[in-house]
Length: 363
Image 1 (cartoon, rainbow, N blue to C red):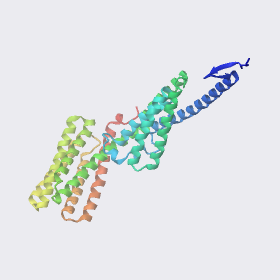
Image 2 (cartoon, helix red, strand yellow; image 1 turned 135 degrees about the vertical axis):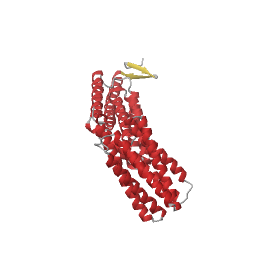
Image 3 (cartoon, helix red, strand yellow; image 1 turned 135 degrees about the horizontal axis):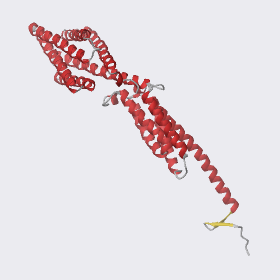
Image 4 (cartoon, helix red, strand yellow; image 1 turned 90 degrees about the horizontal axis):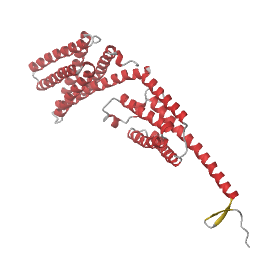
């Protein structure tokens, strides 16, 4: 009779109990190593996303706005600072999801998010950082797959999960209420105001150049310039109401229309029409200054009149230089226009911050 060893039959073969126990031990050992590896990866990626999200409010690790590709900024409906605040909230939420809520879902989202970030970085010319984010995206995708593979095993204890979520919420509240975030709101206003008034000078210049040379794009530039006056009025309406915004838009459109008449008269050599337009332009500047000074006590009328007249003077120098084909003087004139408008934009922003401190202080 043939002797048999005690054991189990698998696929027609006998496996002894000792071998079976060895296999089970080896599987548990490998599972333990895998779990430790996955945990380290989860904590690293989760903390990375959470801290990066929080730093969007503080800019301690980097000037995050500098990584937005210029082509992407053109399509943003909000300022770069406000956009990075939204990015921070998303990254923060993804980080907490990876750490304590549903790691596989958070890791999948992080992977897709990092690919989008890498694409933006490529557009902005930051190729080295884009490569890093692609590698991180691969790591996040790997984590998602590993988490799904061990989904049946408990990942984080209930008490630990609640503690992490509570700490995360507290961190977000502190970040949003911090003086730095409040300062960012004021900085965002300054940035937005500078952009609006920079657009004012850019499209004015575009019209001057086109009109001086009888180019066919003059009307398109004029239309875009008129749109800029609506943008400025809408920005003011956010603080002073829609009627005030509409009134300012109307005054600024008069400012542009008179400038168009002045350029036409100067080009035609019609001194009488040029003087008439200049007088109307000066009165419109006073009207704008009077309107603004009544809206905000931090904008003294005399100071605003001087700023508006300086704007007219520098713009007139630009027009004259362009019509004379004195391009060196034309460039110098535009530099003066641009530098002055930035000062004026900052003065307007400072007045708004002083008048509405509650909108810019930490709550």
